[in-house]
Image (cartoon, rainbow, N blue to C red; front, side):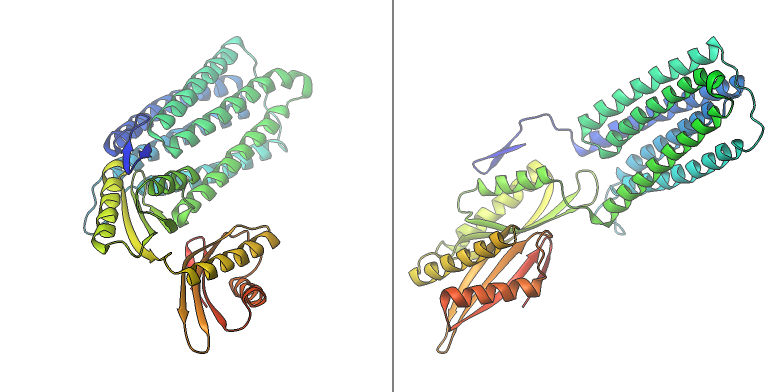
Length: 396
């Protein structure tokens, strides 16, 4: 999506949230059917060959089927409209279901490792290498590869992180199945324990994948930072509106697929008629709701550039902020500058936005700003600074 002159024009095909949910459910059904099929043929191959690695690979496919079931349920629940108990909708059910299957995958990885590891210390059963078994495994690899491409295309089409993750998982399964086939050829040369070793390797792969998915799911539920491209697009669109002089304190909350709530501070000319500024803000909020499906709340910050003395002080403080940023190699920006002149001293009130890369604590940063401003401005000025670190603010 691209914003031009305050209006948003479509530059790429976008799917409505309802259609995305339908496509997501269909992708889940396809995943269920394909993975159940793969489980059946791999289990048959494992029984025919007596290979623990093949059976472990089959169990991996049944966990993938369970994952597809939860993907389907996640999209099904996510389609439910907001209600009294959940005014923000149910779109986060996708994340909850993904977390559940991640835990299941991890537990199964542990169970598979336990079984395969035990086989290392027991009498190994012979692994039968046959053209039928090899053919079954080769076909399963091709089917899984096709499923990976399907997941990737569907995930890209509806911008679904869960489907893209399923595609990556499927590619990993392809390599795991190839490893099993290679092991069947190696067993006559390297010994009967080769199958158990490969079973352990596949189990470890499943466990690591499960832990990774758990961490990603927890991160999403706790509140991962918004996508950088989305932030860049929102800021770029806000700057395209006439009258917007500055942007800061952008906060974005994601409640699932296409469920965004955001707030931002916009700096506008204090000398401009308040009704005109209010009208611009109303238009921006309406555009975002209609074109981006983002519920945006805007706070107006009036700024004045008509006072030369204030402008001079603003410039000096900006130099101080730039000096601190350069000294610690961390981006620091200033906004909402005001000067309140008194008889004994002048209060300089402003906010500074810093990233978590800044090594100084908020208190240390404010102290550094005060010491540097004293050197630049001299006596008679008192700094009242609000430090914005990502989406938290502290006043000193």
